[in-house]
Length: 369
Image 1 (cartoon, helix red, strand yellow):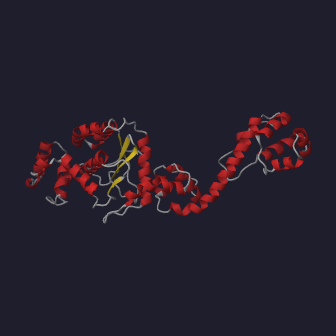
Image 2 (cartoon, helix red, strand yellow):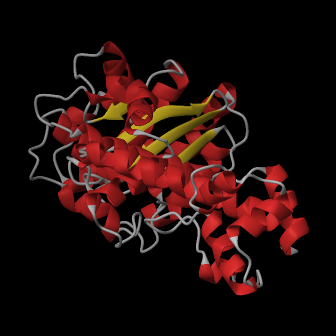
Image 3 (cartoon, rainbow, N blue to C red):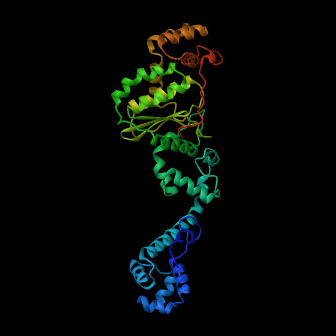
């Protein structure tokens, strides 16, 4: 017997069965015409111990591995690897059997959509395998661990009277943002630098959204904030989120939920307000947070006043036509769609007026996720 075909003959870690190293040893004995009793005499082990070893009933210890090397000529590290692989497979099979009790946890996760986005593999698709895949994707060892890790997000699962988010779909969308942010290098968070960058970020509203995306990300990364764009998942119902990944790295995640530039920029500066002014342990999700929360109201005011300062906002009531909106937008230095969005929000224009001035948004072929 040789060990060159070890990987092919005895695959480890990807089967639903476990092959004890004793089975390999038994094949070797048969090849060499050696009896179990003879092996026991040569290794100094009892016949009873050898029999248990051959059937995987006792561990193949490091001492026994050395004895087998001396008797068979097969290196001890081969036997050690076989034993480690066998024990690992036994544990994996046991864990998978335990996961069968957790298949109900999959309910309300957008599994099919995650498969469609190539986040999860198409196969295997049985429910136990899906539980394994979801746990691995979230980076946790068990359902209990998932609940512990994502318990901090529970405060974000408050829903408004208008929008009802599904917590698991929302958690999956947040996970997509976490993973996307891993690829963005950020300088350590610098509050003063972020405040100083606000005028530059505001100027980006004048650019085409496809152009402004990269610049928005670069400016914020230099201030310690990762900005990612992740399409919403069915049931997540979120347009943006602000949270802290580490004490030195914040995350702003945007979904383009409303598909126009006015909503995008309002949401972005709303999340900037949370980063600048609110705690590092909180999670703020636009469209799911309580509308009565004073910090949400503060973030709304910050975004509104950053885009159209209060002094200039006094002129909004006098804007009646598309040309009025364009001229005002040029005067204050923002995109015309933002002016239209503000006029509509303040009930100065109906929601059917001026929408042609808003820039439509769409995700590029390669999304951040």
